[in-house]
Image 1 (cartoon, protein in one colour):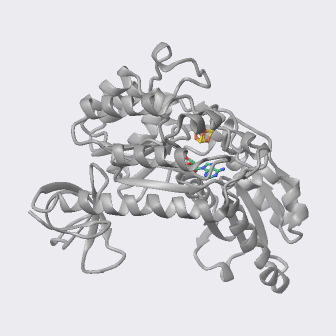
Image 2: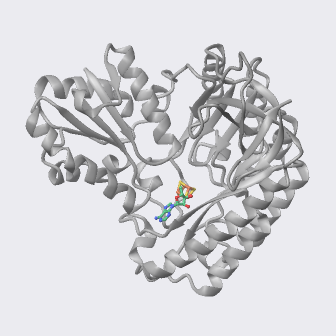
Image 3: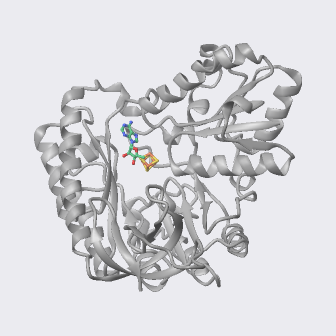
Amino acid sequence: MVVYIKTYGCQMNERDSEAIGARLIASGHRLTCDETEADALLFNTCSVRDAAERKAKGKISYLKKLKDRNPELVIGAVGCMAQRLGEKLLDEIPHLDFVVGTGQLHRIVGILEQVRRDRKRICSTEESADVLTGMGDHAAAGGAFGQIAITRGCNRFCSYCIVPYVRGREISRSESDVVDEAKRLVDGGVREILLLGQNVAAYGLNGNTRPPEENVSPFGELLEKLNAIDGLLRIRYTSPYVTYFSDRLIAALRDCEKVCRNIHLPVQSGSDRILKAMNRQYTAQDYLRYVDKLRAALPGVTFSTDVIVGFPDETDEDFAMTRDLLNRVGYSQSFIFKYSPRPGARSAQRPDSVPASVKEERNQILLGDLAARVEKMLADQVGSTVEVLAEGVSRRNENRWTGRTDSNFVVHFEPRDGLKEGDLIKIRIRRAGSVSLFGEIE
Ligand code: 5AD
Ligand code: SF4
């Protein structure tokens, strides 16, 4: 079969699609980027905001025409929205052939072949821990960048969030499994590994949510084991929940030279009242204390974050506190989301009281602050020399290459002969743009 895969949403979905693709290839199928030549179209969906669901549904609905012309065509939805809606999605979209949830992704190839053969609609949404290892052992090698899902699911139940319902309880892969997979990737040429999970810093706790200082996650040990792999140059991870930064973990971050000094640390709000309503287990002060501790242990560390504006009942004062916290931490990147009630998540029981126009206004204010801050952070680096892991030809200008610094700034530069993806090179910064840096190889 020739299969087209389209992915919505987060990096975990990107990773899952990659693993699905690798499994399809391993069982004799072929992937295509052209949906008109495909025998099967697969949509790996997201549920985290309403807009993401509408986008995928819109796209799938639109494909009716293609299916009318080619009744043999198989169309399937997998991932988070598939999990959330199950049979309802089949009812809603009559030309959809199958729905496979987040717990059954490892069975996708079999299901696809079965639908193609029997022409019967299938809905498979049971939770299963098998997905954890089942989706791991087909990590795509090739290229210098690899990703490993070290945990799946989430036990935190932030009141706005659908993830614990669509991805189930938190489970972790064993340390030996992760280390073996990392070694395999490095043998295949990977130089940078991104560790993925809804809460990577809870790795190995398997759902135990007692306070972190009594209940230290073995994430620090895992990083130390990965740090020791020859040939691996960089390790990144996303996302950690702030209160899981135990002293043990901070010590590992300090001692592991391959672990990048850039931390994605979702804050969501700077108002204690809103944080409480969100069921986040910290105050703004607590959060800032962790940031101070991390800064003290990791010189040069940069932070990025996720923020929600327009949570039910968020006042101008609440928003001002969020804005103040963001400016205080001085993030080098922030992802700002307008609150979207998710049926099934607890906060959806409250009225979505902040008008869309106010959400948009708050969004624009934070984006403006971010742009000004980033411009200054980039300008401050002109004249310095940074270490960059080469990623490949720049998307905007084919005469240039792109790479990232340890602290996750994007750098464009002219390549030298023989430069390969995954080479670590020193670049002298000549110029700063509004979102990236420009330099020369030293
Ligand atoms: N509305 C808006 N943003 C949300 N996020 C999660 N759920 C919602 C929601 N219902 C954001 C959070 C999270 C990021 C991945 O998406 O900021 O960290
Ligand atoms: Fe959602 Fe909170 Fe879990 Fe993140 S920590 S996935 S926001 S429930």
